[in-house]
Image 1 (cartoon, rainbow over the protein chains, first blue to last red):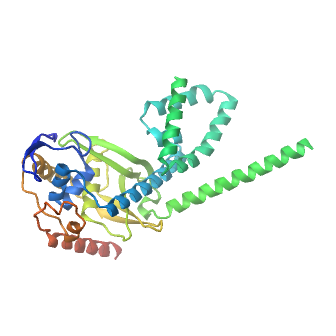
Image 2: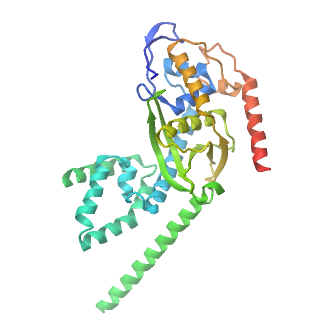
Image 3: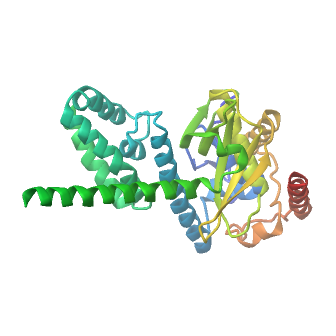
Length: 159
Length: 197
């Protein structure tokens, strides 16, 4: 029974209208369910009138996002040190594990670098430096975007 | 003279390498210090990872962290930035929904999760919570679907404090259901005391 958004009567103005999607199309998120459990009326108002949050609430959300980013980079460091995922730390932080660019970089490492002496040394240096780079990226969206753009170009060149 | 320069450079680089390694180890140790005893031996498997399920409800959940205990059971951790170490009903609902989705991807997920309260001073305190079962989550999902698509009557806030900070007050006519929130807080407090004893 997938949940979709169709024409619904708006609680705010009473008119029939298409409700705005607040998140990913046709999927309920865990956060939405949590919001709904706090106040069902506010949840429906959020859909009909858009998310309205006070300045203090927005500030606290921004702080929370930064905390999450810092904890995520620490987690990536821990995962990379466990050695179970190929330790492509920066690519993992930028694009995630399933991204084709991460896989391409790993393939390049395994097929081109690891078969040469200087390549293995470069990979060791990368492993030494990359966790600190990931920690540096946390909470710096501009730096992250710049590195993302540059590395995407590098990956395209490799392909 | 050249050999001396090379030796000094090697020494400096080695010292730098050792200090970076020590710094990283201390950072790793401090990162581990807030983990509860149950998760000390566990392996961190996912961080900020999105999971989806399509049946019986189309759902998506982004988990903060998932640990795998030595017995193979997955344990969910959700971080919240708060000044007070307190668990709210919405935290449990969110974590239960995450478990519901994760159970469809990986079968063995613990019925207990952790809320990691990140204090403004940087401390992290882990609070164990018992999660809701699949039936309860499905009941909530059905209710939510009914509210959105079948025009069911919505209820008010679970606590008056939620109304005070709400920017929809100008159009809202509902009164908060105060007793539910208070009951939940009391129940949580009792559960924590029982866990400690």
